[in-house]
Image (cartoon, rainbow over all chains, first blue to last red; front, side, top):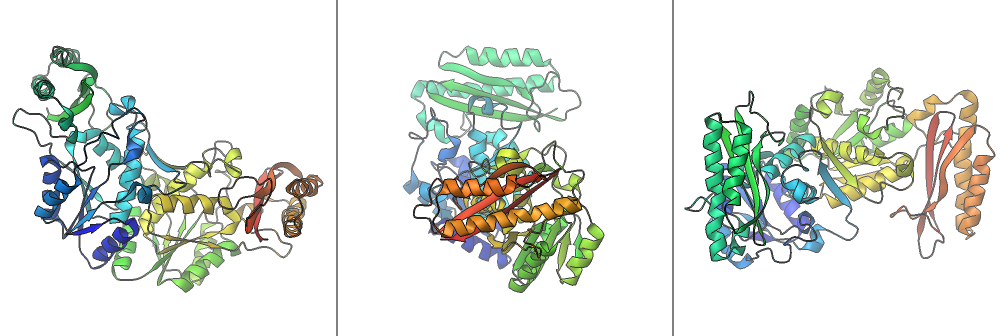
Length: 283
Length: 283
């Protein structure tokens, strides 16, 4: 596995691979890799000639009061894991090379970026869209892989890719969960023992809501039930949102109408840790 | 010459050319082609294996009170001119294919977009940056060619290309002028006879200012002289700006200091027509 730290070298290397007719599967990450990330890398490796993984904790997508400084970093172990999966290239850039002096460009996806997490993390999806566009330009992938756990991120990125005519296919892969249902996330490392137990409630609440959606229960009752289950946990200190949404527009649903699929999504705070999770439900 | 109207077909066609090892020179235009455009196409053809020209009057870069509806359109003659220069591909898309339903993405280059013309045309450079990114993604050019007449546009695009790691070289080509010095522009077609005569004053004023810069005269005097020459013309109904600027930051200069090059730039209104011009002066 080749480790590349210089954006221009990555770009030349990847473009040459494409010019030789090889497909590239790209997995962008912020490191602290868990089974969710590894499933993306495996999928990329199975569908493409060349697998490129990036580790970059992108400062542009963190708010001033968020966890940029404390975000888990574990590059040595990450490298071992990626090497084991036989990825071809690992991109490990410095901040100063990704955001050169005078950096002043940003990509905004209106509407989709302001809903759900966007309301609580202003500027977050602008930072995500911008860095993902940069990484796609550097790796010119045939396909890029993202986890469904960050569902809103995948919707924003798919819209950006379509609107800007970026020539990569965005592949969304299933959320990988712990035995008790907790969605894998690098931020789970923040959780103390009791908080970790509480965190399993997110998936329980989503699963219950999913059954209610399938049973055709009214949206108001589903929302109330979601909030009731989450509020019952003393370790859950805030519910940013917990509701049923249109999976494409991300607008909150008052009724499901003709929709074949709906998104049930929650974001809560457990102590200082913000956790998100979601299910897509076929009706 | 192949005329392509479907973005996806353009993208596949161009990418295949790059995969065959051929270089692509790309010239984006809004049509109503003049000698300035043709010089870009000639330059592109001389430096690349494949030459791609686009004609697209981009609604996103026009303000609500601007000249989108009346912008000169002359596609039939444009096609003849491009064919004569032996361009390989002409891209002629529809609005609805460039801006599909639900389009919601934009690219902003902060700072540079707000100065000079940006102050008088809010949102203009956001529209320019967005459509140029789209066109670069569709054509994957080795080099893209722009005229110096739209100097601020070239600065904004170069910054965007650098910041977003777009893998194309931006080539800025000299302004082509009429015999009396007027910079070629599709908007010159708007000018009535007397207005056309007046329009030559822009280049005269720039040339005079250029001599003053070389002679080391103070900025205040140069600015005053520029404004005096333009104000003396009764057909010039407004001076949006006329001054000396830093050629990279586009900030107005109070003194030239250590700068090797400065930008002298003007924007005026002659009747309903807005004209811009500039000179880069080596000191």
